[in-house]
Image 1 (cartoon, rainbow, N blue to C red):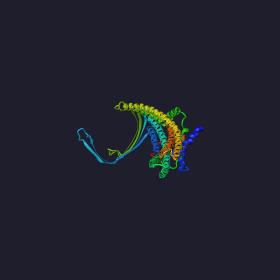
Image 2: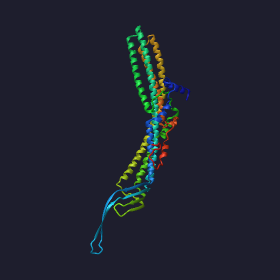
Image 3: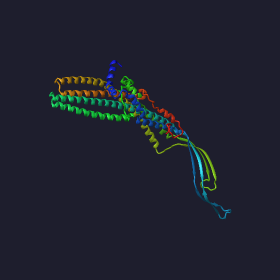
Image 4: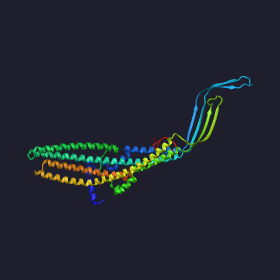
Amino acid sequence: MTAIGRRTLRLVLSTFAAVGAAAGAHGEPLEAALIRAYVNNPSLNSARANTRATDEYVPQAISGYRPRVAITASGGEQSISNTSKIPPATARGPSTYLTDSGYNSPFSVGLTLTQTIFDGFQTANRTRQAEAQVMAARGTLATAVQNVLLEAVTAYMNLLRDLAILDLQRRNVEVLQQQLRQTRERFNVGEVTRTDVAQAESSLAAGRSQVLIAQANYTASRATYRQVIGVEPGKLEAAAPADRFAPRSLDRAVALGIAANPAVATAQYNVDVANRQVKIAEGALSPNLSIQGNVQKGFLGPGSLSVMESYGASLLGTLTVPIYQGGAEYSLIRQAKEVVGQRHLELDVARDQIRQNVIQAWGQLQAAQGNIKATQAQVQAAEIALNGVREEARVGQRTTFDVLTAQQTLVNARVAMVTAQHDRVVASYTLLASIGRLNPQVLGLAVQVYQPQVHYRQIRDAWAGTRTPDGR
């Protein structure tokens, strides 16, 4: 950075630094607010929970490789009556009938194990699809991190801006009150007219109205800060732009945005998810082979009073070859292919959107940098003009209205400079978000970064259990 650039940066931060010094020598820097937002923001914590829930798709898909075991048991009371015909001893002898009746309490227990051997690679494709869904969810989480951090920067700078504007408007009222007293004194000695007093009173009333508006804006910014950061605002400090983390050229920024922005990564993984869905749908047309083992033990067999105990075991293979199932499976394949085309188009849209966002953010940053210099010159000129008008008014060459107009021009210029300083910082972080680099690692925040792969490794190969890794 050149000497001129360093002087410009010091001038840019001067107004905010003055507000921070008025609020207290030791305030909360922007980095501390970003850390609080990263840890406490409910929207971001919700996105993390969604990522952990998406992780569970993988063990659900992997379960297709594993056996299914079931224990069955049955029991109850039966009333049985069986009548049997006994043929005659001789050809012409009469037949006899034997009736066997009574009550029975049958009970049986069994174990069934089913293992799929081949399912048209549907389980393999579901597993790959679930893994792609996990990666897409991580991309969505990274986007949420960027959005929350940018919201935090905006909320912080909005509050700092509105506090500075409120301070300027209050100081303006003090100046206008002094101006009104001087005008009344001059009116009492006949130097000015009643019109001059009325003009001073009108300007004071307008100034007080601006204080009320500034107070309302400041109150709203405090509420937004509490929502985004998660705590009530303390003493704020002046914040510097994040230019050191951004590329030096627009072309480099565009290339980096398309390559590194998590929104593009999410769209790419969504294409993978759609491609796997086509494979899964096509797998429904393939043969299915499974093996089922069964062990059954019964006591007092149902429907019989003579069977006291039974046992059976079997190991059977089942091959199912689909021939025609109504045509739904063909429709699902065609539908999945259309979704693939849609996801490719969404990927193109995401890339175009990122390109547009980077170019727009770059332009806003350049405009904000230029606006800083313009408003600084505006403030300096307005201060000189006000001093000159006041001196001329003392010797009767200017009216009270001229002084009030110059005073209001200076206030407007200072408000514009405060707003430009705010826009400068927010624009730098907006550019950082558009290229996919607004995260704790790049910013160097002293916070434990959330690692989604930790939860994934904990649950991926879990065979059983209902508790989450955190004990719920």
